[in-house]
Image 1 (cartoon, rainbow, N blue to C red):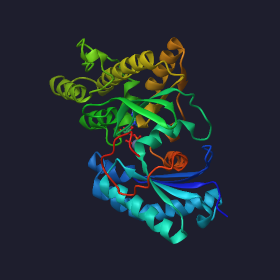
Image 2: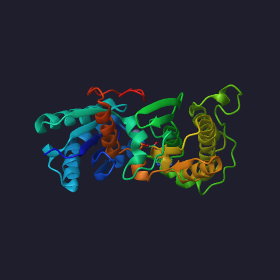
Image 3: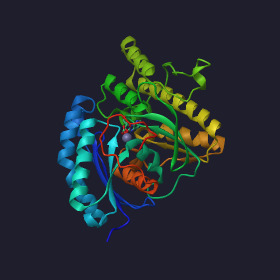
Image 4: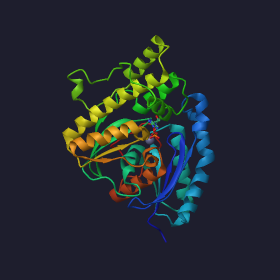
Length: 336
Ligand code: KG4
Ligand code: ZN
């Protein structure tokens, strides 16, 4: 008999992930197989290497997720698989695997927007978000602000015009010779340094640009490159601290403007960069000041995982969303 459980599959970047999730967000199993060690030598994700690793890892991950959840595959309600945005080769591995499993097990398959997964990740395990909510998604691929009146009412209100903040962390890490993934290392080093170098706070000075809820990080990244070239004696920790402080100032400045504009009940911060203790601390302070409930889910739900894709899958089921299974590297946040 069909059980109220969705199998989620996520292969959009460099983590192979499978999970089994109930409609209320209860996570029966969640597996994330990281490929970070494969990509370190390249200083970033090498797409072809990522796709090949997904091929090797996705079926074992699905098998293990089902075993941990103690569910027989044909008894599932359906399968939810990330169809975009992301690396096209990696996405195709996930989508084709899910499609084949769906055929073999006679289960419906829904192609899910990865960004919708991130937006819902804070409600995994327990319902943390109170609506209306403002969500800041800060990851390697995206930096955006969304206003959610409810789980089925999503409006994109700001996004980056160039690099994402996670990408800036990764590039700065490469400039400092710290390897990949860069975020956690830059973050750790920053806590040992002093933010003594003045770096630009993009779009915070110009009176017109101050009003937007968009972001830009490529100028900041270039400023760090110039700083390293012109001041080779600068300590890496001080450069990292200066960079992190500039990122935090920009993120929090926009977050404040967005919260003042929409007056939500919750402010949710998700995505890999939400692992940053500096961001968590400053978010909590801002929310205390503005009387908004700060919603910072555990880091395991903030970074890429298939549980958030399965939870978004339940939204698709409830909404009767169109079944779209074409993998696509570009997909706007508002589309299914
Ligand atoms: O959400 P995520 O796992 O994958 C994407 O969808 O992109 O985010 C990965 C990003 C990487 O850029 C990584 O450097 C960054 O999150 N990151 C961090 C931290 N941990 C991971 N950035 C800042 N501080 C951290 N502690
Ligand atoms: Zn992601």
